[in-house]
Image 1: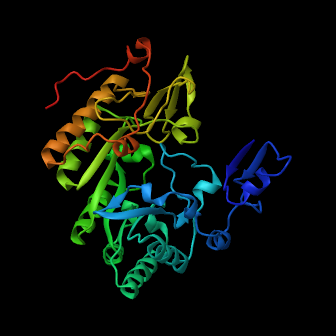
Image 2: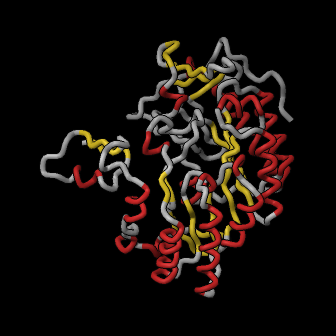
Length: 368
């Protein structure tokens, strides 16, 4: 059987003696589709069933655990999964008091002072500054300092938010800038412009917040020039850390769901406003583990554009990362189990007849 959408209440239907084949928790009109109040009233995660001591994660040297303060993301980026799914697209938020209560519980129960918030874009919550203020007050009451890390949306970021986040203990932000080329940001439907992204970096720096810039290559219309533009932008804004991935077209993303088969085992997504295309090779998931991140130097691309074949995307990705790391003096992460979690390695290789592209020109110049 399959549970789709919100699972917190759907699980009780799934555990019946004769459950239905599909439990639909993705229908907003269903009683098992979580409302704000239901989300807020849920019990805290049963961390007592987990060996918390073996969870080795830290923020600025402070031992940390993971939290979720809200559900959903309202944006429609082409590479992101569930863009048409209500349970993933609609925002549901807990109250600020509820979130702080969980932090205080984790501190008192486990001594936890670090919190990784895995919400999609913390600052889509209109009460985010209120939440940060309450987190700050809780630390004063407890006479302790927290350290926090989380994701924000660039074009929504303000000085007020940044100041409140720093006071609450944030020292690291993760921001999906994706590209340094305006053309690619348009094709992604990112909404943020290059100016928005540059301003976001400036705001973070003004308030002492370090930024890990999350970048990607292989979008519709990707060219050698757009990848060079991403390199140049990273050099300009100087993030404290970054990664660069080759795009994967997962089921549930517009890149996958809106693609049409244009050749045997090749599916093509077209962004209608510009006509730029992305081609992806059909993958047999019984044979290939296809991940959105890979280990530097060991990437495999299952996509290509009208301008760059799959091997070129891999080579350019590797070049971009090496160039920017050298320029900004950001070392590669140490090879460890934790790093391999961050950089999940793709497996398998594309057939050579797919990798060779007679109508996709390769890179003709030596990149420097």
